[in-house]
Image 1: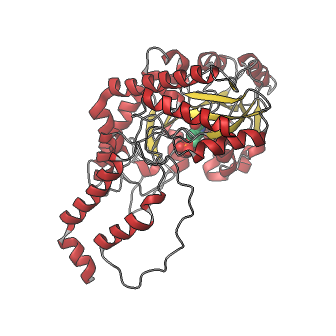
Image 2 (image 1 turned 30 degrees about the horizontal axis):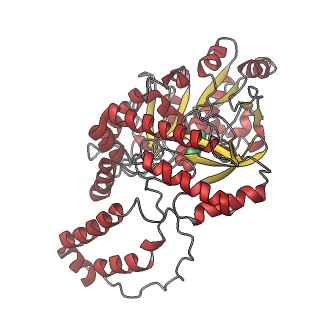
Image 3 (image 1 turned 180 degrees about the horizontal axis):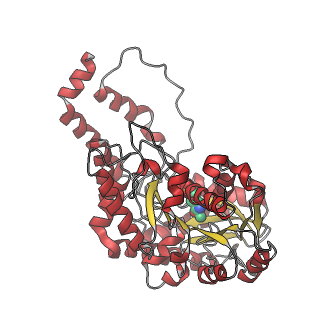
Length: 463
Ligand SMILES: *Cc1c(COP(=O)(O)O)cnc(C)c1O
């Protein structure tokens, strides 16, 4: 063994203590550090010919790189839809690396069983029945991709071909219908060889991001019996609008389609009796995507995918060889996901669900929605600003009351970011440039909302 490595092994408890101390310091300051870091990153250092040992590496990291980390884990980072990591999830994540399990199959440990337990808890949390099986993947992008890959195989089954064996050309052009599909659906269509341009945008309800179910029925009718993929959206990124999943599912009686639901963060409406109606009908989906590093507040990278057709999923993803074996009735995860070797990314979610339960996570969802509403009300009362849409759940979408040109909205966004108090991401909604403030961090409070509003108002005065 290299002598430095041997020394680190001998001093492992001290090293972990040092890393713990840094983590504790950083977490203690998380609420007060600048929410983003826009300074230039350090120049690249040369590859060390001789290593310095882990303690010295920690010191170099602390000095050179730690200052450039954003406060995205903190309470006032409202860009994209960004969760944090609950204390239990953080502990679970450390232990994931400590055990460093490869959740490829059940040959050597209970890790597979632990992931299955966690998936079954999540299934219950989102109101899905036992007909749905699931697996952890890296994010909603991967989850959408897996769901649509299974959909593609289903289309093959409908026309008597196997896409997994014969390729996507065997299918001919694929029909994909959606109202406000997320950009990652297009990415999945590209990766899957279906093609980005095969997504047909079905008209939306007036003034909404939700699909017009009647127009969807018309589009399905026009296919004259040809099977299709419908991507329903449960929580759009601009205005958190929800397709009427029940109405869409009811169309299955008349038309032949695979129903994939992108519930990346909207799926969490199921946790609250006040909002669960928004995802009524979710269980009827053939495949479902839910992100966990957003509103479950577990660290990157984690999402779950569910489907009712595990048999087709195995056709797409199986990875059989003499040394890893064939898929069984209860297939190992390497036969179900894009990855073969996989980290035990279920463990942080297991920890958070064990620690806080359904009620603890319901409280996070309801509090963050209440905070979004509070910010929405304050923005409406602010001269010079207006909401672009009602605050339906956890996102506030707003713009300048007068002349919301791209240039002026960019200037406002820039001034907000410069404050270091909060971070919002730009968007265009209904043709109007605006900003989004998305709440999903477990530690955000009313005091934070007041600070966020203060930063926006000061930026408005400056911009
Ligand atoms: C965030 C999001 C995605 C993509 O999620 P990643 O975790 O970034 O891969 C897909 N769909 C919706 C609706 C989202 O909000």
